[in-house]
Image 1 (tube, rainbow, N blue to C red):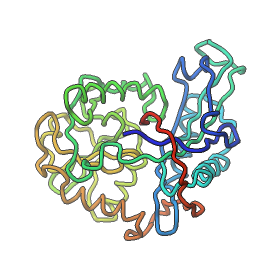
Image 2 (image 1 turned 60 degrees about the vertical axis):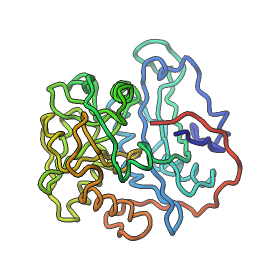
Image 3 (image 1 turned 120 degrees about the horizontal axis):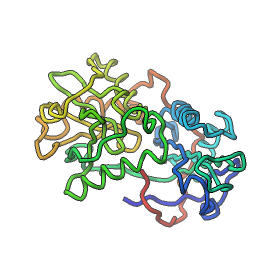
Length: 324
């Protein structure tokens, strides 16, 4: 599904026209993957646009840069403000925010020297359901792929780094070549890790199961939100290592992520999940999650950051390629 270009992008402290937010072809990040990024959903609410867990996303951006020793030229408050600026300036009622921090132009050496500046960009675009609108109820068919997640002490999985997503691309593309909607990866020890770009939950006998952060997963913010919401609903959540066959024995299963939100899984490797799609616990969690944005669920945890009310931009915008 294509997304629409916006009018402006925040880059290195100023709003630029979309077409002027360019990068030099010899930038370090293009050659070596030295970038960290976030994806943040902004939802239309009765009180205007509201970002979901914006501060936690920006904090993780700084954490990812810290792990990869990428200097941050702007402070946290500046980037929080930049996120609001691009939504307001582009007159978006709902949006997908993409803050990205990367090593720019200056050297071709593998280790970036002091002559390589850090660049920071925040874009806001309109973008719908990552795995499709129908999947939110019917679920998506997935497959365990041949590609595994990196082993510990190789590539740091807790950093949301651009280079890490080469792994996710291989996982997702292999699954889709074989007719599935998405792929699941195992960790180096053959246990369940996560989806190509999503965390994973299983439901069995009324309990929620999810792999621990030590299973080479990204510690997802939506994953954390689901665990909090499950607790609010009186549901037990177990973070534990999971063998592959647990995927075939689940009563329900679903992905979580900023892009995927809460997307049910219909089948794994051709074995239909017992619920046959969205099960009752997945539905309860979806209702509680999406209820945050229509006002039917109270924001008990202070997860919403409200932006200035805007009007939709009537300008017809060009289409650009899909994002992850």
